[in-house]
Image 1: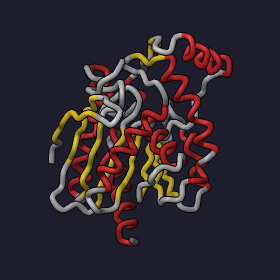
Image 2: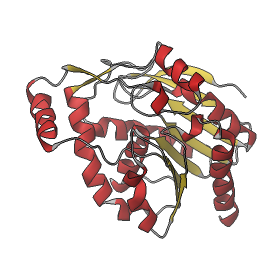
Image 3: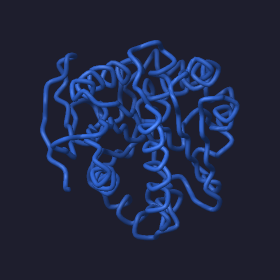
Length: 272
């Protein structure tokens, strides 16, 4: 089923663009959080595949992304992302079925940070290529923190080759030509993201809900080593897809990748 869309005003007063793949009698409710610079529209095939399993799926464009209100590539505080997730998880919970929180890349960091923050937890957690680490020298981190204070809305170029996302050339071309992707990030957003990585990684042991982590073995944007700490947790299933790049969900093997996620969810639902 194709998605339906709407724009709502969030509790914070932000006009938020939302995308939903509805099911009349859902077996699970999914909240899907996209990554940096992209938007919810890049997950149509994921929503449709989840629909086929009877999952009602809701996604949204992050603040400053896609068709959601706000300066492009800017947030005032990382907690703003978490507030939006908390609000939307409450909506998901109203369906009366198990709730799955899923995020990719920055979305994976957001979902991980949300759960360790002690907020109302989902029943299941799915994390794709979580941005828990960045290969950035200390002096650059310090500069980002300084610029965040003195010029928080300063725009910094944030662009890369689409070929880093997938071995499928069409994915890279579509990303390059996507009018909704953002090509800059503010100094404040960069500092907030960097400042969230290490504390979240150090707190992963607080995640007690069943969790599925997937990562591409040839991911050059967020190397698979970033998600290795998850593997030590007893409630986590971690899968590294050899040879796949940053967006496993957009690789030629995407059907198998998505099937791995839904098979895991099905097992968790059966166990409940």
